[in-house]
Image 1: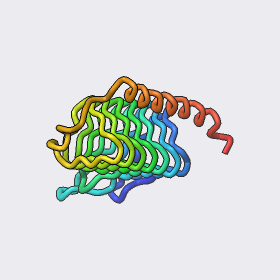
Image 2: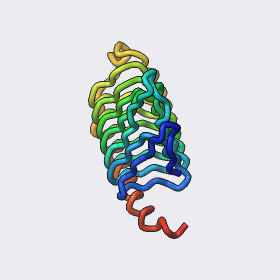
Image 3: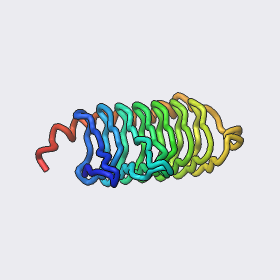
Image 4: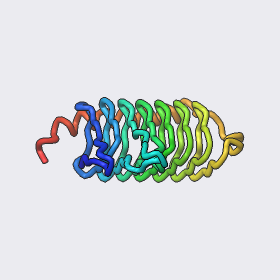
Length: 186
């Protein structure tokens, strides 16, 4: 469902993107080329800052927002999800937040007030808040990262981990094509 926010902002979805009919996109949201937005995802840009302004939520080309993901912004802060990134099932990305290109965010993870650098992997059930994850970092499952100092104990992404992330992104690229082909059947 595509709908306006109280300020009149309306999502802009590229014609090559696929948005599942059960997903909700509300307000100042920009969805770029070949994006997959899965069932029951909610992407909502509707809160303003003290001056009545808000930054958009931007979903970069080739990225996928999987089933049950919530993307929202606090007090006008924006969210940018880079190109070819995967936000896995039931994760929360709450702005202000920036996720780089070719990033994998695992199931049930929470990002808030942070930056996740290009090529990083945040595995399942992790929390990343109030810090800047450099490019190419690997955050193991169930990690809690609440400051830049917490990153001192975290290593780089291996080629196997990067390969997994790329395979998820590729599978979702194929889903965009498949669902767009059959969208008039349901």
